[in-house]
Length: 460
Image 1 (cartoon, rainbow, N blue to C red):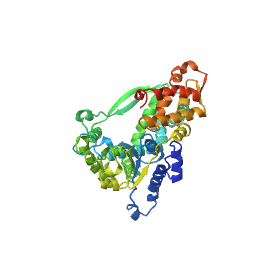
Image 2: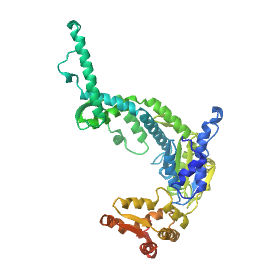
Image 3: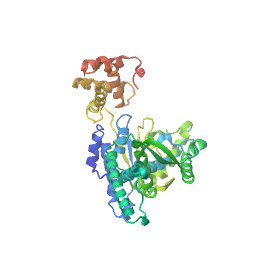
């Protein structure tokens, strides 16, 4: 894991998420504790369990964005799953253990990419040598003959002369190859291919995808590979040969071992919509039947258990779980007590106000204003926003959220799209022009939304 301090983690999150300082601090400390635990003596390391977190707040306040940015920030296996996708054992749907199998798959892919980066240069050099062998067949010097002991002194001289000539030719072609001057020349490459029957199509059904992939992988190892000769440009042959060299050089046993260590000690699972599996009190019919069952299936995974994956058993004792939910219809206390106890840290995220919307439009590196300016700049149109226009958009966003469903910052997407609809439509005809979005223009365009009797036609 990257050795970022809590302040550095918060600073990275501040680039994309406005406000929610309490949530950022909790997440930053939790991430830093992963690193701190690795510095402890081994006897104490196993005793320190992760302090799982529940983020509570309405939609559109930054919970999902925190998950997205964490995935890019941490150098550790990370997945985001939705609790509503899971069902208890015996029901049709995904079983809870599949999240750990998915996390292990992410870990293996992550380590494989790391190893690939380490070996890429060596594989490139090997592929280059193979390409030179294809470009320089042994007969290219036509008149030479190999060393013959019975030929007297003449044989060794010719052999030495041929060796020097081949080295010079090889060096000359290597320079041309590295400069890309031979990319259009065609060569014949022997490519190994394995045929695997469509096991997934045969098995089908939910809950057995892991078994299908396991059978596919087993059969791919058992079935003999076929070598096929393909004629292709040097540019494509270089890529094919490089990938083949990488496959031969990568030791998957070592990759899986490193991935398992990463997953078990640094893995993070972001469990979204956990409020959807909370029981609503006395309800005992319909989908509520399996909600408590899902919680009980989640409990051993969060507490710490061993999950069997196609890469071997994986322990979940030190995987960090970050749960999130709006809890509009339920509350955290509706979760079973055992599961509540495994999420000791709870953070309530604040609802967004006009000031927050204004900051969201301006400050983040990926702010909506910057996005629309970049999109229209691709058409040669410059778009500028006055301070009064941005303030007006933020006020209208807050007003509509209060009068209809509060969907937080997601409302800004609808407002900005409606505001710039005509400009976007006619942008190809306005190349070279500068368009200024003023307060008056914003009021004129957005008042239609406020005055409409059927707001649901325009607003999510």
